[in-house]
Image (cartoon, rainbow, N blue to C red; front, side, top):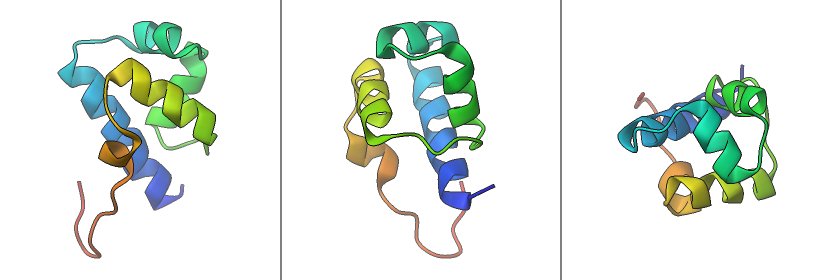
Length: 76
């Protein structure tokens, strides 16, 4: 598993949880399949930029909010 995809997936899941959204609702609002969203959240899938933008719109956040780098040695 790529550590960057793992971090991105965790950030997506955390934001979804903050909003009280289910994976199914997030997928529907982003126009994506629920199983695809699940794989993204688990860091198992390298998503496209378009999918990331759709997720961010559904999560009401900027792409930068999910993709800002984490300093070396820091873990979420």
